[in-house]
Length: 183
Image (cartoon, rainbow, N blue to C red; front, side, top):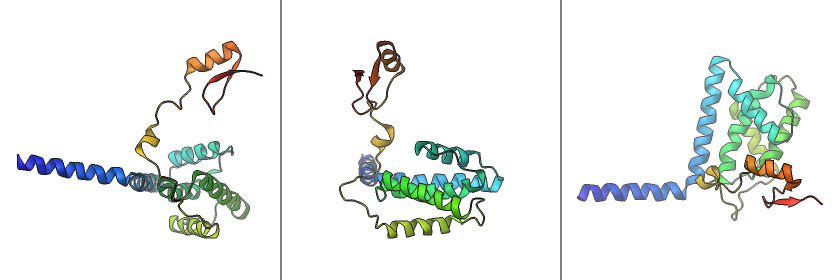
């Protein structure tokens, strides 16, 4: 009985610790996973997963997919940014600015990606950006949470809603998620 109670207390303590530090755990896991992807693809000479990730990031920022020559370095930047964004140290807005500025400078100075910076050099360049722009974690901004990653379901627009809006001539207001008549 005592062993079960002790085991239950240890599990509860770990749960509380994991919940309290979830953004740091999410950031560490993201950095580890993305680093693992980069190492595996660098060893095989393949760019598929890194190209898809960087192209998705560019698409979110309304930018065309980058050339293959600069994908590995941009992926290293995304890896370095991931843990900082997860903890809230860098906001999504600043992450987008840093990423676009880095890519712009890279295309201007090294369009063929040569000489390629190492992951450590990319991380050092990121630190220079953070220092130059004095980017600090805001105390009122929480980092990523498990709930934030999983979502609550109210941020999804169903196919039925889209079809109804098309049929009735209404627009879907993404700010309020309700269908409103067109003016």
